[in-house]
Image 1 (spheres, rainbow, N blue to C red):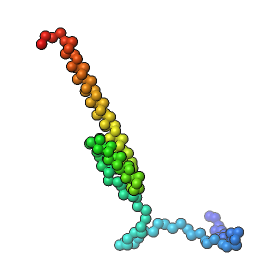
Image 2 (image 1 turned 90 degrees about the horizontal axis):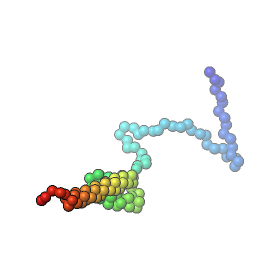
Image 3 (image 1 turned 30 degrees about the vertical axis):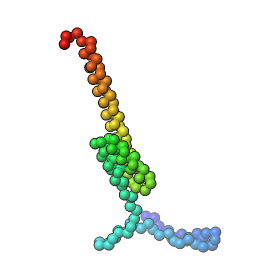
Image 4 (image 1 turned 60 degrees about the vertical axis):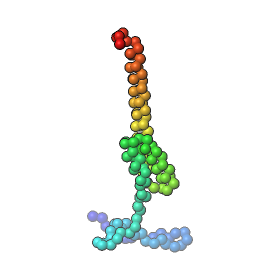
Length: 125
């Protein structure tokens, strides 16, 4: 067991004043039952268009792209939350649109190729 040491007196500052004594770290005080809590930090509200952009990015990709761009502009102007949701809606919308465009181009090429196959057929019509 160690011996208790006497408290060290505060060291005066160059101006000759002594700083106030340090207080031990207190546990967070919770309000008693029925009292309202003290106001603290609250996150900014999430932009509604950012949420819509994410949903439309899957369902209607063009709508997700449009809403995502509008939401990013509003978030930059107002400081609302939801930048990640808007970006996700944009990215998903662009990816799904690119997949749809490639699919349509593939169908056009396929049907054009199938149409040319009949011209070289040896079957009599």
